[in-house]
Length: 124
Ligand SMILES: [Zn+2]
Image 1 (cartoon, rainbow, N blue to C red):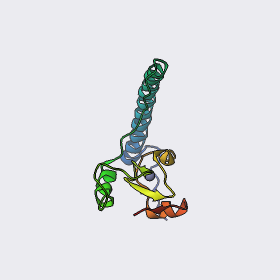
Image 2 (image 1 turned 45 degrees about the horizontal axis):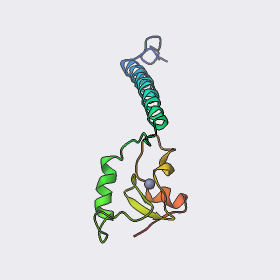
Image 3 (image 1 turned 45 degrees about the vertical axis):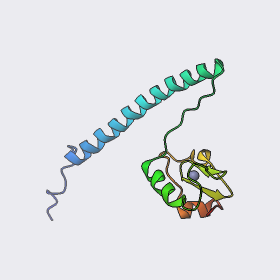
């Protein structure tokens, strides 16, 4: 038997090196993000102390905006129905808001399956 071609494991492959670099990049990014967030939160706390009510919000992604156009048909453009979620871009029954998306690392509209799992339905 000849396994020689298979057993060169002492040196990481390019792919493994890339993966490691990717992990490092993610780690660096997360660290930088955490730093920036901490500073932003500090600034917001300062604003709060001064009597200004600000909130740090991640904007909804472009996909949410797209589905909002679809969900908007039939309702007045500038009047958002009560309980409309800014991330999903539509209302559900029972209503929810962006706080329901807190568990998502990347904020995105709930899928039909996720809505069903939460016992929510899209409100037409
Ligand atoms: Zn939502």
